[in-house]
Image 1 (spheres, rainbow, N blue to C red):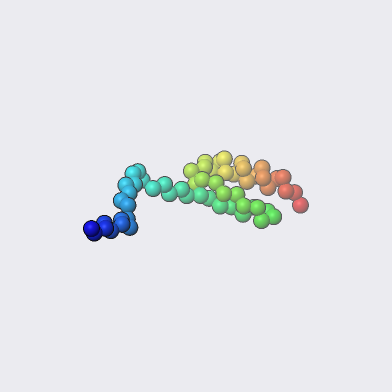
Image 2 (tube, rainbow, N blue to C red):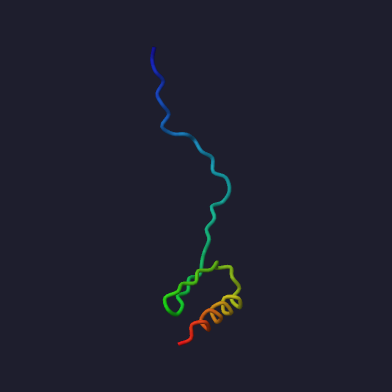
Length: 58
């Protein structure tokens, strides 16, 4: 009786588009890093940076 060879590969089906998220990375005072989605509104980004930098006064 011959033994059946074992399968080394199992087929897989991948559905949907791969997500490619782009981020904005900003280095703040003191080496802090702010990483946000690239879809953030420019005004919101400016508000966040201003608020965070105001908390670190020299």
